[in-house]
Image 1 (cartoon, rainbow, N blue to C red):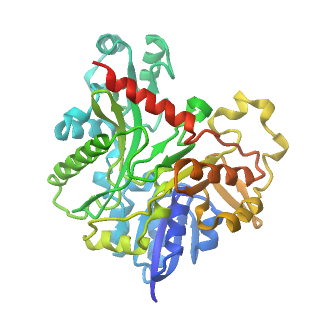
Image 2 (image 1 turned 30 degrees about the horizontal axis):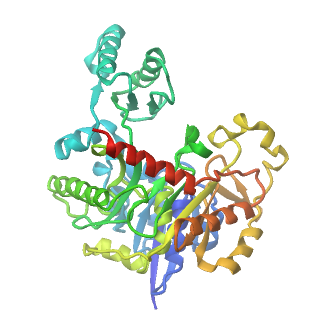
Image 3 (image 1 turned 60 degrees about the horizontal axis):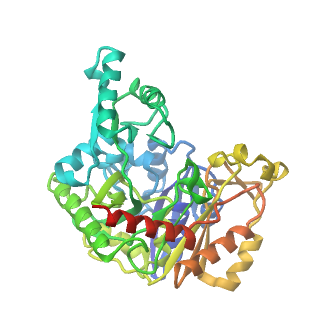
Length: 471
């Protein structure tokens, strides 16, 4: 059995899923080197060398790679921050280790303005209506207000405010969610506009799907659709989060989409990739997952809400564990430029995140439900480990924002642990995921209970039916 050294740049359960897939390789003896944002207990257990780099600083990642370059065959990067900051460019230049992620100049999630302009050139039909406001174009706040209000007139106030580079300000804001008056919207706008350009685009009514595709730079291999749950609480209440869970159906499309919807997704994503690729002279520049698209399905076609140049968190967790082929071999095909297909088991998967009380505003909204005495206790996995004898590989547990202290696992401030259920259908997978989530004790962790529920899916199906009937 060949020995393979793999560097994984990690921040959360998404990368723990990758580490797990590498460690399960049937064809290779894998030696893992993990550059991690914290002492993730899963990664610590699996890694030959594990280094905590709290801010995922590219220079420190490079030093870690340089220290072990004779043993590392390739690197895999999950989080967006080091990709945007050029981790691939730097590691490859300094060590010669090939890295699976897009090159810095093609990590287009770094700029929402560049995304919109790229899609406007390649697939304008997929863009919602939008207008870019640049500080360089205005001398007075009154002029800005005048133009913003004129644009809101055209959009009938149904608008989404997006900073180009969300390094400061209040981030993305949505009419009806974050503000209900123009005054509130404009205050939100100005909190971002003082730092950089801001996009105001129309708020699109529809149902969302997450589309991801593996890429070797030349070939584009779509993966099945997934559905992410951004809102903190059941029934899609509360603030947006990084994602409270996600699901995948047994086939490639989601229950509320038709076969034609899926074909239209594939056609649009392929069009974007093919036209984008013609602008790039380096055949390897887009390898990894350069298109992780948030699609909004409307009554009149698909719109692109945003794109990320990385694997989805949590959506990639729904897919990697059911790959039929060795994940190491898939990575070698990406590096060799000959990845032309990927096969997955016919299975549904449901991912539920357990998170600390501070996450999503839970402690503020439901203070009486928070066990304050348990917040700083270690997380106990013994119950869920017992379920592994019942479900075998159909249940997977991936620590995310957790760290080891004195041999025990403690939750941090973000999504602490993901529990994946794998089943023949969505409901079977959901029940396994929920049973696993209930079995994890300590840390006062909580979770949504309606991820992939029949009621939530039926609401999406009915919504799409209504949209398709609109003239």
